[in-house]
Image (cartoon, rainbow over all chains, first blue to last red; front, side):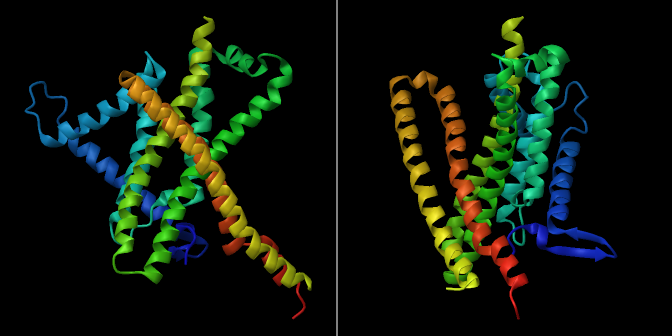
Length: 226
Length: 92
């Protein structure tokens, strides 16, 4: 039984090992890229008849933008590409779980750690962009300089939690499926897979909304004072 | 009881204990959260969007405690570092 798709080596040549996480991540990236390219190919034409794919893409983008601007208030469109990419990537990886032989790359700690690190880098970047370096890092010294270690600790632990939450949920889903296949292979795995679809979407939503909340907190501190 | 048996015994007992405590306590906390959120939504249906979003964020925070326990239990069962160490140094 594989704990994570990291341990499944699909192809290896010399010291280069291509594990399942990388391959399935590439598949998700290819799917998202091809879909967006196909949909937005003729988008510059002014009087374009509305196609159903374009409607679908617009509906997705509008839904994400509504959520983001609910949390961040005005000026939220700057964060839209980053958060939308996070959500779409995680949601696609999780929903494709119903495809046969699919191992969600989000079930590997490497993927979720990479996503959490990118959030952890993006939060100070957006904060600095809105407020400037000195003003942003002055927030770490509030209310007093004694709070500096606590601020750093909270930032670290919340990013750790972000990675572990997604990893734990997706890995546990795979584990439960594997156990159920060995004891009751006929009917129960389907029910669990349906539950897994819901869990996957909720986890994608939670990851994206938490990233939004962290960014909004970093940005809002700067706006209240100015 | 020699060291190998002791470590195996402790790991086997610790994994379910961790899982039991780590699922009961967050479950109680999440119950309170959901009850309160449903009460608030029933009183103010207009604010359902904000309340729902905050509910999800809070649930994610609580849920991560249970997930920590689950990860620790899984590590104890499938990738136990103490067990690996004992097996490595044990006399053949």
